[in-house]
Image (cartoon, rainbow, N blue to C red; front, side, top):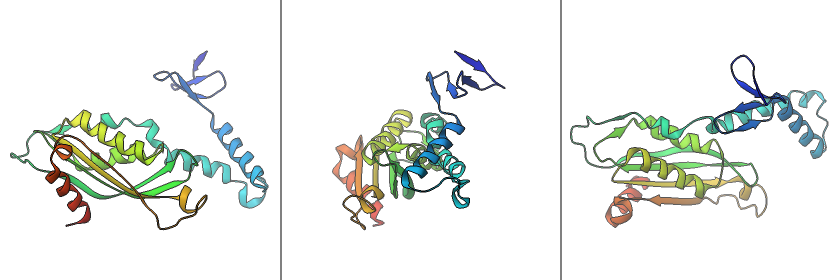
Length: 212
């Protein structure tokens, strides 16, 4: 059973409840308790001076790292413009810094995204493209899934002649643990429409990624 407390909904355990999805989140107190448990499991004492405030800091950091769950990328792209004086070519953002977290080990994936679309009569503010990348990045991810999600959202909302995306990122789950191979990056791509059908357009996009 749900109750209303000062406007937002909470379930009977005091957890934040989203009626749109039917899901509830643990309370901040539960999240901080989980961090204290991990500190103890690692072999340290959560009550010592240097760690006393760490659970709260970690929870606040998680609110920032995973803010993408609270945003709708389609809504961000909702406002478009048709007055482009007949512009008919690639619109691209290059070298967009990307920070996400691996869903397998919850450690950072850091790199760059290059994203382009070929408009079909309407364009969107370029900052919105960067915001869409950030929204998907601020979730637990695999690079392959994130690449496909960004491309699919641009394709669905903007309905362009084509979308191209390339992500080049280093996975700390590979560089700092496991096989420990620093200096290795992972590249994923997705091409739709004209970028998939026309190899010259694909080549143009890849040349622009390299700054050629």
